[in-house]
Length: 277
Ligand code: OGA
Ligand code: MN
Image 1 (spheres, rainbow, N blue to C red):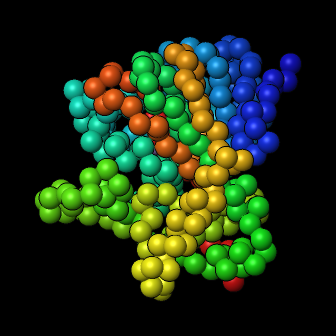
Image 2: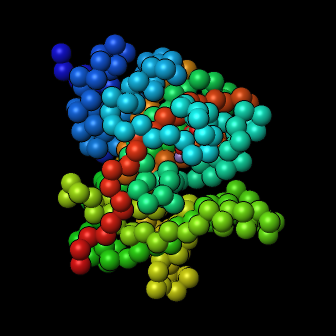
Image 3: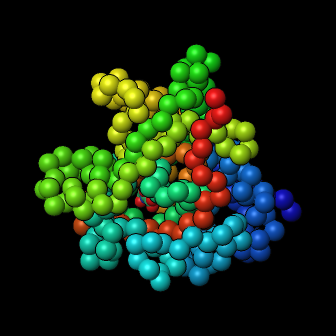
């Protein structure tokens, strides 16, 4: 038996059709990781992992990353319902294009998300392939963007869902810190991807208007139809994304509807570094 997979769109996404037992055996781990890097997003339709199985599957693929927000919890509950999650407020930023953990020195390698309770409307998870988006730029554009660095922060994402925050709230988000990151990530593999998202707020050494234009132009480019995949959830689906070569967002849904996803993560293996100039 080999890994059974089917491409979803030319530039992004594959379904993996092996059985739960085959996935849990770990014998396809290398192939799954290679496919993830190539395709950006892997969908395991109605695989129906229990939490224990999801943790075990995650551990076959690399180093399991514990959640920072809810210590001691192996599977993190992703919901906007404040009754079930201390981080529900912070997750409002997940409705805008982002990369997970840009504030960390080494962003996580991958996230694995399972649909437990779905929203009656909206709530699709969308992904874009930032390797493909970079690779399809012209040589002139690549040269223009290769050397730039960008300031990122959690406080900037606050303005997306709360345009007029209290100073108290803003300062609490500012305490999380800022990071200066290359706009173009030169990976150890030799491939390059774009580093964007709602945490990005300023291209270093550019006037505010030019900076905003660059960031918005590239987001628009990277999230165009050909580079994106929108996952319409069925209960029991598991979706895994390469957090180093994609951005993602949840489509709006009613925060009180009970939507519940369970997430595990793989520890990052390389820091975001710029191409040597
Ligand atoms: C996440 C995330 C999107 C969703 O778990 O990091 O952004 O659809 N989730 O819940
Ligand atoms: Mn996210």
